[in-house]
Amino acid sequence: MIGFFVLVFIYFGFSWGLPWHKLPSTISFSYIFDLLFALGVSFFFRLPWKFRWKINKQSLKAAIEILALATAAIAAIWYMDIETPFRLVSGLEWHLLFFAPILEELVFRQTFQRVLIAQVGGKYVTSMLVALIFAFSHLVGLTVLPVEYVPFIGFQVFYTFALGLICGQALLRFHSVFAPIFLHFLFNLTFYLALQLEII
Image (cartoon, rainbow, N blue to C red):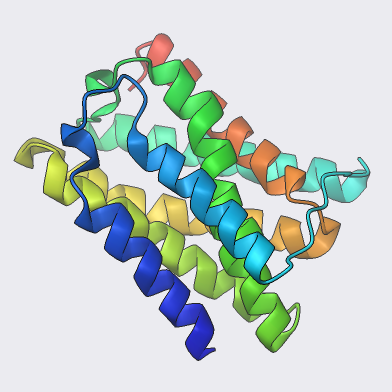
């Protein structure tokens, strides 16, 4: 367990401690760090890379859970009239539909959760602990976004915890990193459509 928390400390030390947003690039350099971190840790700990995912009733159930969560989160944001910062992001579709689902799942499920599984076994507690860390990671918005987005960041912590929990359970259930990547993509796609339709 100590090794796991050292990894978490190293990851947040670099991802929050360095001024990635000040580097001149349309693609965030923090994404490159995420990819290198996931590849490096997976290689060092010899973590399994499994992408094959057999579609079955459990898969459909997980997809329905994700769609229900996304719909509930969007409805709550609309009802409470919470200002969202998504329109501040240039190339939103790339960030929301490609980089975030792939790289966040590689870091949090493929890396952190697989390391934790190797240390304590494939238990529910691994997905819960990693979901908490995943939700916590979204608090970085407090350091880079204007103050009017604080209510959104606070609400985002709750729905990203639920998202992380479903994605973590998908890794445990299907043993494939593609399952949480797809579910995360589906969640973000629902948000993206809500933004395009100006629901939020």
